[in-house]
Length: 130
Image (cartoon, rainbow, N blue to C red):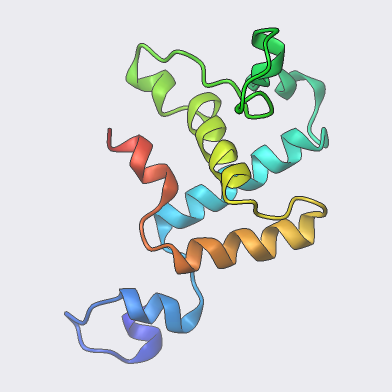
């Protein structure tokens, strides 16, 4: 990014990424996982992927505020904790909480990238670094 903008060797890059409208690597990860979960929600992926996430309403029979959110599986190991099964559920629940439009792929991609550009820390890094 510094080479593209002809910036100094030790220049800060946050504003350069914003200026060029490029996502950082962690944000690209959050974007890709969010897009994967969108496709999973819309049932565009192969049926084998449907077992990666279940809604809370399918786990228990009582009505709660989080009934339409995805159920976060118990992760006892770091490998599972950093997998799409857990990170993807956290990201998708975050997307639902922030009310990012999920009507079409194009609309979702646009608003999800825009949200990631304005929100500096990566959503996934909150879970990966824990």
